Image 1 (cartoon, rainbow, N blue to C red):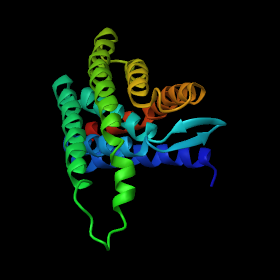
Image 2 (cartoon, rainbow, N blue to C red):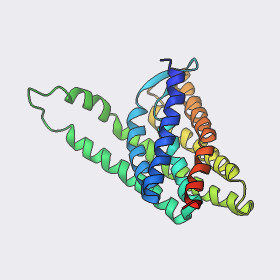
Image 3 (cartoon, rainbow, N blue to C red):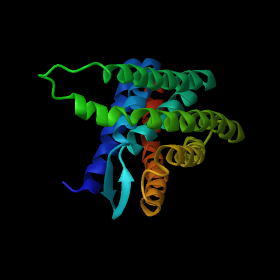
Image 4 (cartoon, one colour):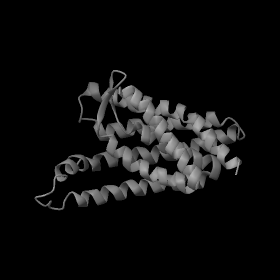
Amino acid sequence: MANEILWFLFILVDLTLAVFAFYLWRKNGAYAMIAMSTIICNIQVIKTVRLFGIVATLGNVVYASIFFNTDILSEIYGKDAARRGVWIGFYTLLASMLLMQLAIRFVPDVSDWAQPHLASIFNFFPRVVLASLSGYLLSQHHDVWAFHFWKEKTKGRYLWLRNNASTMVSQLIDSIVFCLIAFYGIFELKVFLQILLTTYLFKWIVAAIDTPFLYLARLMVRRC
């Protein structure tokens, strides 16, 4: 299967899982998806692939869905619930990094085969986490603020506008901060600029695609 087809399938699966978690557990489902996504996206982002002829990292889809979940929380439960989700994601990522740093320092048994693979991923993990946490806190707090700013300006109308206006600016902040800390100096400049471009562009596409899913989540609540 071509990477481009798999990428669009990945978006649909990820957003469907987020909506289904919200359907099953409401606010707790959104919190669970935020916690899971902060770990998964920071592992996936280490892998580079070629999409639409340019170099990109994985993790953009799953990371973008964090904004989707905080927007659900903002829309239905308010600013405080969304900010709680942001801090849940922060804590989950920090805890996972600390636990994996301890895990890879255990001396493996002669029967072990996983240590070199875990070490190659999680030795680089602290730099990724530092980049992710820096971008995450700045962008997510901006996203919550901007979402409610546009909600007040439009008097609660135009969900599609506040979803996209808040998320797309927030993701630009995140993409610049994350890529500079995580990847600058790791890749040659040409590849780095491609990764920076695709990191933002692909998150932007996910933000546009997730709008109908956000309406669906809101409709679930209204019908209950």
